[in-house]
Amino acid sequence: MSDKDFIKWKDEYSVGISYIDEQHKSFVNMINKLIEACNQGEDEASKVFKTTIKDLVEYVKFHFKTEEDLLIKYGFSKDGYDIHKREHEQFVFKILEAVSDFENGKKFVPNQTTRYLKNWLSQHVAICDKGYSDFLKEKMGLKNI
Image 1 (cartoon, rainbow, N blue to C red):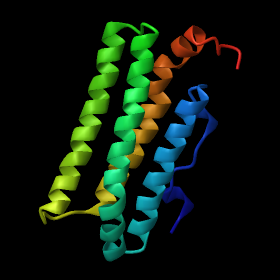
Image 2: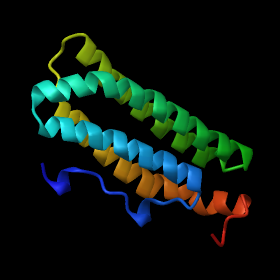
Image 3: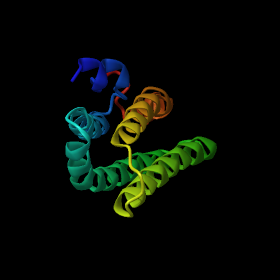
Image 4: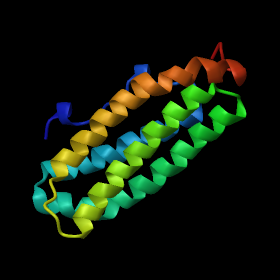
């Protein structure tokens, strides 16, 4: 197992809203658990995937609702909100598709799923979530934190 295979939390991922950052860190930990299992072989990956991926789906739904509720509450632009929500929905669809394939005995490649999770998280948090960060911090009175 190599350090480069895991996601390391970086300050650049922070959106400056502590409970959102903590939720992101929990997501990172779940993905790292899956990556570690993949590095231990296909049997371990399948076993861990079976128990972890549903928890991950439920957690990201909770997290996405948290973000979306904040965007609505503080009046984020409709277009910006719609784009962000669509990204969340596409992500959940893709993961649920992987879960369904796994449960229905289709050829499942855990490494592909974890690579997708890792890439999506890095891109989404570092780029897309940063798109609302300054807006929400200002509206929430967190600008100087």
